[in-house]
Image (cartoon, rainbow, N blue to C red; front, side, top):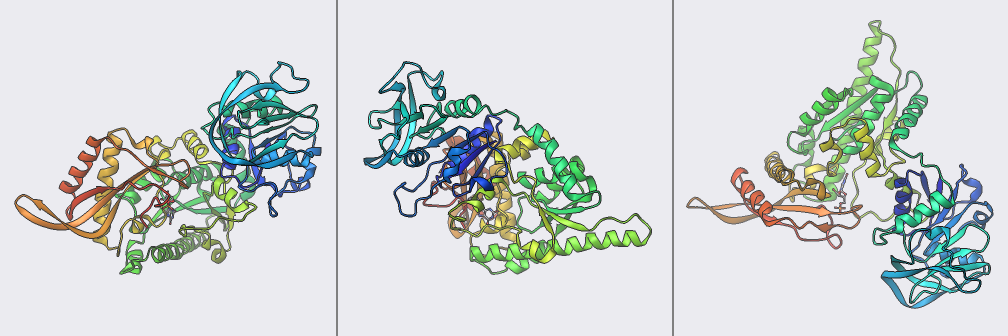
Length: 531
Ligand code: XMP
């Protein structure tokens, strides 16, 4: 295991990902973690970058005991500066912030220089393009360190300790803008730390299934919500593999799902994958509570709360049915003790950050409220995984490819894509337009190039002409974005003919729509969803 100490850089989770891509398990912990509190023995430590300056009054610092663990340490950007400072070197503000590409010359420079290249850069040539993003840099190296890389403006762009396996680099090897950065991380993790490459999804499945069986015991029962998305489907299938029908999945049809979603989830999860599933049609209840509501946060709240009500009622029915069977002489089923949640690692990272969870711009729908009322314990089999790992896991669990690659879909569903009040008629219009849009994207083979695509129904009417008649109808906006993590996103550049086909089909096939527009806003300043 590699321990990554997070000083708050926006790239910290990428370091974790790069290690995992090398099949090495890596765990991110807040930089303030005390060495004595780390429950495993890391084979190496990486100190991340940070938005702080090491000299800031409130700058975060690592437990000095990390340097006495006797394991290799790699400091990246702020991590290098932190390591330098704690070894009595000096860090100063640069005259200018360095942000962007730089060329690092690789060699051993300075006193006692030899031509031999350090293990960190072995086989990477004499020069390497890297990505820099910093306002401070080393003005003096710590004693007993030497330079192994420099740029035209940073004489200490990479340093190494003379006798200990301590390294520091000013650039960011974890971002894709450093094309050979992955190899630098590989030199550190595999060659210098000697980590084993045993983090694979095949191993994960086996271990996780045993862990779930152990947690649940021979009788314990688990309940969980599925939405038709990747995470909940993979989590549900994994539970099914582990404890079979003692896992019960519930899909709540809230009336604002995509076209035929309830049926499709039922066919796939229950018929094809064999998961014990109940689909509850609660669309009347949801739509009646949403009547006349325009405010997006209000819509989210109503959907979140109604979901909890419906889910609890359904869970109670399942429990009651089990008791009924028991009365008739069937073998006693255990109580429902656990609630399955498809929490992923990025959510875990977010909640363990030393800065505390970041400010929420929209209250994202979650089912956390269920726990308080239902007295259930939480089981989260995906909490160690990144999204791409969940997808790999899904493929191994025989979940169909189109589902594994599916774009995310928000909990409040089409309610936050219908601007203005939500009615059954509006839902129907949007479902049809969205379905055509996605169908054409798939036909053009563009689905996997886009991170998220969907249609939005605007609460305005525009004039059109159909046949010889004037029309006065609603407008559909199309959105498609590319994004790494949805914190930032760029609008997708469609080939014109694809947009033309989509527009023509929507205006021809969807009654009530006479105009289609394409959204060309990036995030920031816009968000992905319109509400
Ligand atoms: P925004 O609109 O915040 O979207 O840029 C970023 C990602 O989050 C999804 N999203 C939600 N997901 N409940 C969810 O489960 C919500 O209330 C919600 N709002 C936005 C959005 O679809 C995108 O993937």
